[in-house]
Length: 324
Image: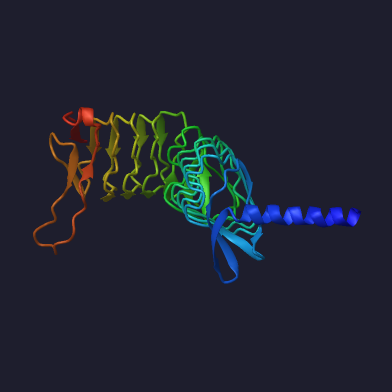
């Protein structure tokens, strides 16, 4: 009788496992599984280590996107890649446990998981994609020493995030007063949107402000750009809605498109008169590249510094650009 019971119990487990695995769609390549979708309604989900005897190594692009039932997910040690948009807009997701084999977290992987206030990045991770954790209520984040590749600002819209911490032995990145830089602090990569400070002085070591670096820095009213800065990336100050004015020194020779977009309070871009690349257009909300001397070979000019993109209700508002 006991033997029959054990056989029935094992059959029940087999049927249950088969039923659960049937809720996944997946692809097979080189003897491994990439999960591409999930049709179940579980709120707590332990992703299987293997399906059909093959190891699950990737959570595919958009595999769990907009799964509104999912509140907790455990990713097994077999998984090495969490691909782009994998858990994008999982609005109920509050807990994520990643196995210790995850190497890459893709672009927008956890974007707009607006219940996810805490996550631990394993020490195995080497790559974090563009906006990977954007628009989440994270209140803290630590980037381990293993991470050597970070995409465009991984934390836009994280309005509760006061600091981006980096392991002190990371060989590629560093954190200075909670702001994410490359190792030598020459490139400012990401400013935490949850920093409550209203003023920020960019360090004198900085030569480049990365695209989207200050995105959604809504508390900032003043940013000091030192003479060391040469390049300001596209949309670098996107959504800094409290920023009232900015001084651009003579060292800046490259400003990306839309650098001050949606800076609704911005009334002046103050340009150093010695700037060799840009000059102010009087009475205008943009600056124009200085024309090259007629005796030099023509070259492609930089685009105008466009600011600010205003809300529909205030499109006729005037603003000024002032030479200093």
